[in-house]
Image (cartoon, rainbow, N blue to C red; front, side):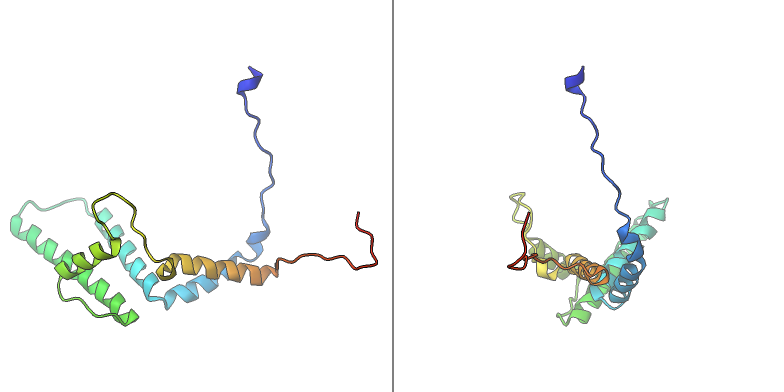
Amino acid sequence: MPWDVITPVAYTHGTHIQAVLPVLIDRHKERAASNPDFEYLNELVQKSHENAKATTISLNEAVRVKDTQDEDAWRLGVENTLRAAKGEPLLKTTAELDAQLDAEDGDDGTGDAPKKDKEDDAMIHESALVLIDYINQTQQVASIVVPKPDTVVQ
C-alpha cells in the first residue's frame, strides 16, 4: 500500500573532509602522544586486547590468586602513572583505587547516571581540538552577510 511505504531520503555524500583528513589525523596523533589521558586509555585498550586473547583460565586457586594480584598491581600502576602525570596524589592500594573510582562515579545506588565534569574529559577536549583544526584547515568561519546600503536585496 502506498501509505505504508516511506520513500528514502536522497542526499549527497560529503567528500570535502577527505582532503584535510590526513592533517587532522596527524595533529590528533601528535597531541595524543603527549597526553597522559590518552596514554592511560591506550594502556587500557592494550590490556583489554590481551585479556580478549586469553582462551584459558586456570582452575588452580594459587594461580588464580596470583593472577588477581598481578591484575590489581597493573591497575594500580597504570592509575598511579596517570595521577603522577596530572600531579595528583598517588594511591597505595587497590582498595583506595576502588574507593576513589566509586567516589568519582558518584554511584549512590539510585541508578542515576553519574555526572562527570566535562572539562576533565579528554575525549571531549580532543574532539573540540579536532573540530578547531578542521575549521582552520578549511577556513570556514561563520559570518553574517550584510549588504551594502546602496545594494538591492532580492
